[in-house]
Amino acid sequence: MEHFNVGIIGSGPAGLSAAFPLQAAGQSVVIVEEYLWGGTCPNYGCDPKKVLLAAVEAKEQAEWMQHTGLIGHNEIDWPALMEHKMAYTDPVPARKIAGLDDAGITHKYGHAYFVDEHTVSTGTETFTADKWIIATGARPARLSVPGDELLHDNEDFLNLPKIPEEVAFIGAGFIAIEFAGIAAAAGAKVHVVAKHDVILREFDQDLTQDLIAQMESKGITFHWNFDTAAVEETADGRFDIVAADGRRVTSDMPFIAAGRAGNTEDLNLDAAGVEVAGNGIKVMADLRTTNPNIFAVGDVAESPVPKLTPTGAYEARYVAGLLTGTEPEEISYPAIPTMVYGSPKLGQVGMSAVEAEAKGMRVNSIDMTPWLAYWRHKEPIAKAKVVLNEKGVIIGATVLSAEADELLNYFTVAINQKQDKWAIKHNLYSYPSIASDMGFFA
Ligand SMILES: Cc1cc2nc3c(=O)[nH]c(=O)nc-3n(C[C@H](O)[C@H](O)[C@H](O)COP(=O)(O)OP(=O)(O)OC[C@H]3O[C@@H](n4cnc5c(N)ncnc54)[C@H](O)[C@@H]3O)c2cc1C
Ligand SMILES: NC(=O)c1ccc[n+]([C@@H]2O[C@H](COP(=O)([O-])OP(=O)(O)OC[C@H]3O[C@@H](n4cnc5c(N)ncnc54)[C@H](O)[C@@H]3O)[C@@H](O)[C@H]2O)c1
Image 1: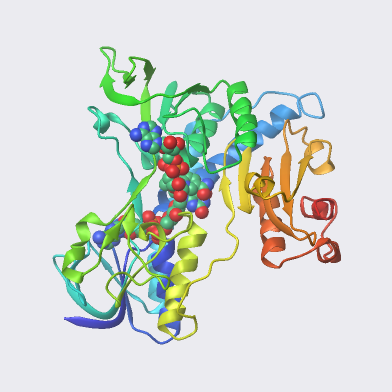
Image 2: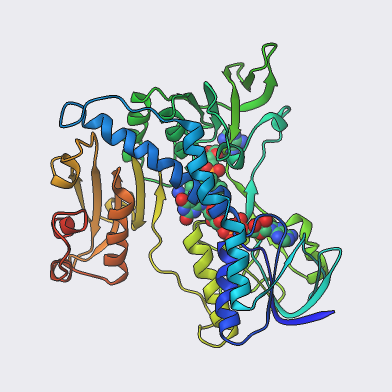
């Protein structure tokens, strides 16, 4: 039986982000993966979504600029766009394995489960390690209603060979809003089936109203307060999502986008003394599980941060540092930007405007549509709400715009570096650009 200093279960952004620094620090490392090397984000999550979004963004920009220097109508050629996406995603697993080989990290393929607190098996091979890191990620949460098995998931959407004429997304969170925008731009008739009367409940509900209006203007239909009771196949081979009150949403392909559940069940955690809590694995302030020799990071860890690629990778690097003596006994997180890649994009970092207003703090609400960076594309909507403390230091920002992802990163740096308006103006940025407007916010 092979023995390692550290074993890692799962090769997503979290698992891989632990493996490399541990190996570089002289630890012997084994990493086990049961499906696609690289995990959710690069294979069937963030990255393929953003490849598809490139065509959506180009199409939208061209539409805004009709008769302002551009003429002619662009359409998304879905099969060609999918081929473009595959050219990015298909090589991912092999590239990840090559990276592990280059670093000399042992990698094993198979479903890993605990035999005891130091021993993990894939059924065909068994290894021991002094410490284990669980980085098994999450999967789509399912509905316990009749017909749930008829629903497709994020991986199916991101691999669709052709875009159906009519699609429906159950859920009103990140995935439903992002995929609805992509499907609508690709020519599908789109339904968003929302359990309540809000979307993206963790975001500014003033700006989500603008986002809803933008989505409706693209023909997306919202079905509010829709309590899904069943999914049924119709006589003509289509699918009905049926509400408890009898309403029906019919489409060619219904998708589930109702949150994610941590992959905890098939790990035989009891054998290792690891407890689950809520939607994942219970962790302490140093990301140790209830077994001090076993850690959990990323989507599967019930840590108090949004479940995103950067947060998972950050937790993994922290544990690697903790195990090699370079990190303290408690993790502390920097400001975490969250970004919904909708049409337009909506992102938030630091203190929200709602929280700031409740505390009587200063919030600058800014309409950026006349600003050069937005006006030149004729962007229909571009708004920011910026929270400043009593010293004029930016402590929070929410942005709604096609450019929100890049702008939010500058706010994130400003918040982490506690930049006041003088510090912000002390940076020189290429002009004119999204960044060169930073001085206007403080
Ligand atoms: C559609 C979609 C879009 C997203 N977009 C974004 C985005 O734009 N930005 C962002 O920051 N985040 C985004 N996310 C979230 C992001 O993908 C996750 O937060 C991130 O992948 C979590 O990394 P992880 O390593 O914890 O888990 P994962 O990436 O899920 O990796 C876990 C790995 O563990 C493997 N595994 C599980 N159980 C076992 C086992 N028993 N044995 C062996 N292997 C096992 C799995 O096969 C998987 O490869 C998106 C997610 C989805 C679904
Ligand atoms: N841009 C990004 O960073 C990004 C993009 C996609 C996914 N993600 C990650 O993946 C996670 C999963 O995305 P998601 O959109 O599935 O989840 P989510 O948590 O963002 O939203 C879940 C939605 O499903 C709804 N819902 C819950 N139970 C329901 C039910 N029984 N019937 C109908 N609706 C129900 C909720 O009201 C909510 O609107 C995100 O929370 C995020 O961590 C991130």
